[in-house]
Image (cartoon, rainbow, N blue to C red; front, side, top):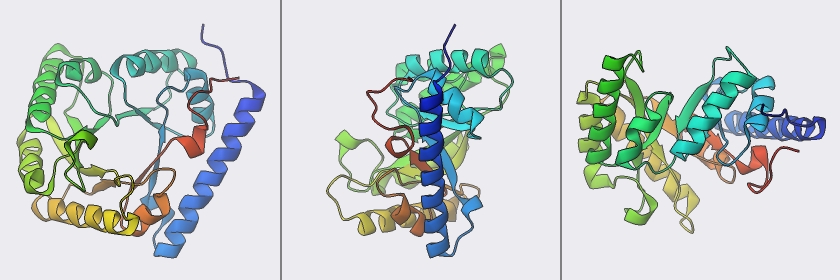
Length: 247
């Protein structure tokens, strides 16, 4: 049986969560936005199920993972630790096409669709899961946008963005929720998020329902919120050093 987080760890997570929520609220106030417009997605990759359960107890419901096998196991552990909790699991990392069928049964949204081949693989896996009863509805996804076009970072560059968005929107098993992006390391942060904001507008011009803009992490969420982010993907600031386990 998976153990629960220690009282000390719970207190630490509560403190960190309060700090992150305060940052989001302050950033929204500065941008003239309602804090309810920005969802906090707790990035819990490599973090124990016990810690996730503690975050559930603190009111979080959305969690981001980036390894298919690890995430699938964690989903099952949370079903045992917090049965009936209405959790949402987001896949936020690079996803290999042959792993699509592994995430489809449990994932709520895939935020890292960056190629036509991955979109097609997910669509195929979802349709099979729907036929088999492993899913009850199509899979919401975000198109991952590359600010600088570097293929090693993941993401679709400007010249392929709208074509990929059109493909996702036209897929029977997928729903286009919007766009996700990461500011490149070493790049001007303001310029990066301005480009991400503009990319989001271009997608919405063709697909008005694609309103999600998942941008900004622990170190730059304030800038991202200023440029329209609706999802803050926060890991380190919330859970601390990734080498730690629940204690």
